[in-house]
Image (tube, rainbow, N blue to C red; front, side, top):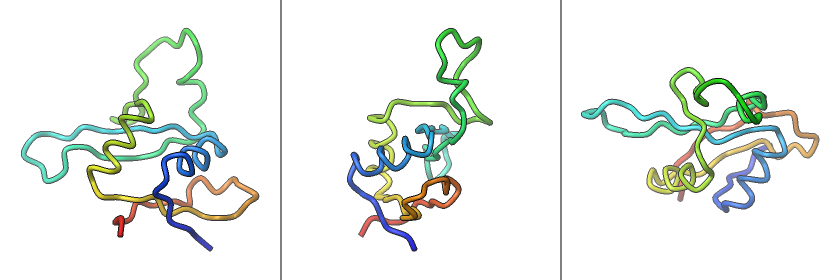
Length: 99
């Protein structure tokens, strides 16, 4: 079963409960979409104090929740997630059009 989340607090709680972080990727000018949204799970080491490099994962960059939510809303998107209360379903999400 799934649910569609648009509320910022609900989205943040779902992601954090599964050890996730907000990430974005800027794409070259001239492309249809300027920013690619994603969520990264299991990357706690990148958020540790005194890490040795930029917070980047395969072209994605860890960003603030405010920046991530701005991109989500500018794209007219919502987050469809598993509503399994047991958690552990971090791979079970997708971005959908906000109705």
